[in-house]
Length: 427
Length: 164
Ligand SMILES: Cc1cc2nc3c(=O)[nH]c(=O)nc-3n(C[C@H](O)[C@H](O)[C@H](O)COP(=O)(O)O)c2cc1C
Ligand code: FES
Image 1: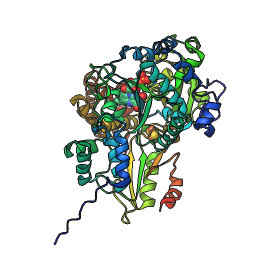
Image 2 (image 1 turned 135 degrees about the vertical axis):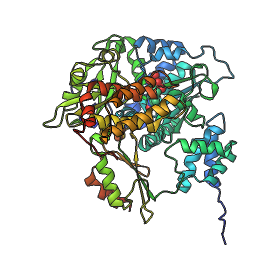
Image 3 (image 1 turned 45 degrees about the vertical axis):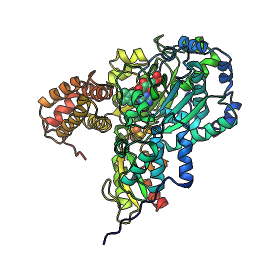
Image 4 (image 1 turned 90 degrees about the horizontal axis):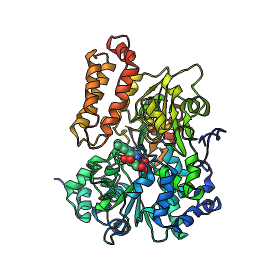
């Protein structure tokens, strides 16, 4: 539901049904709401059968890449080598600007995540799961800690072991291989793939990494079946289920809204989230977290919120972080601010990323200070090209996305700065 | 005459017991790095060179390795900070909602004046941080371990009073 607002009639509340209900946080409260029944059901099935249901449901990863979840699980070794424990890493590093859904799942329905984690552990025959929670999430961490203690006391874990692992401030640790490095006690540097985590993951063992929201959906799929999940689709059959969209920026009712895949972005922004502030109009929107291309108004009003619908408008569904910019937004400043984010968060292993994110930021700051040249726009695009598809992970590409789309769609604003028609104070 | 203060180890008594329990969660000792550094910071408020050596010895890695980790993660302090450590999100979505004014209000009301500097009474350090994962609750602020949502410049004096 549109937490912290009342649910909207056009939402399909599945994951967010109990947001704001403190009783759902406790083990008892969760069981009273039907919790842990799906786990019992799954444990009675062979692991491969659980994977098959999830595969058939069409569920795709909610962490950003949209990789089919069931398919990912099949990459794990079927015959377990006794000397090689299997691991599940739960990605709760949520740091993509614009995204704040995993936080609410953990804060309000910690047992939904634990239940999904346990079912997944059964499916991939994992012995241990690490839930990697970003260090700044102090409250979600405390809630998860309490839930884990209650579930353990109630013997809900069986022989599975689940540990919480607290991050310490690094966006890059949300990238799956960096996350594994971080759990191993190292700097959060991404690793070259292959080897893929399913073969050589955390501690060199077979590993699956999934996002919090992905795992929270799993119990529902077990309870209601693959066909039920597959039927939840308003547009492309390749995008199924519901999705939590975090709406923020220049918007009347910021919050998390849960809608069926394929829902119009226009309705999410104008209707569910209350639209623009009085007297303001929409200028731009980033639909999938800061790493995806920016949409202009026309594209925003056309875009359907599923993997294919976003691609059709030249952007990506990403993590579902919807950032709204109204006509008062200074796009040059905002794009600089995003570039600065990536420059700050680059792990600095790859030259294209380390230098590219830093120079992109510097050039944008120069433009804002009124010292830009028209060639700077080409220079930025040139840099962006060298930052795309050339590095170990896609942080570098993520910095290029808002810059390239921003220059393309709001070029006039950049030119105003360069021609001296506009000036900003840059801290 | 210079008096070299003797280093008091962090990992004794209950803290050492906690570390031993943490060791059981991972197949390698080195993996206890982040939890161990969090215990150090909890006890001392920051991670000193000497603490890095101590952690290295306990985990069986070099002090240089520990330093490499400490410097990678922004939440570990390599210097003492104010008794109250304030982190204000100023990334784009929060910036759109006026985060810069919240930062200014904190600098003013805490007496810290400059970003990253500590107020003369040692009570406050104010920093800007990147996205706190709560963009719909702009502007989120971390005061020590307390996550405060929807902070406006008007609310800052009341928050500062609470932690004085
Ligand atoms: C720079 C970077 C940051 C990322 N941050 C996150 C994150 O915070 N949370 C997340 O779930 N996935 C994040 N991802 C995606 C993960 O690498 C991975 O695809 C995902 O956790 C897989 O889970 P899923 O298949 O359930 O989506 C990030 C990727 C990159 C390149
Ligand atoms: S941008 Fe401020 S919390 Fe995300």
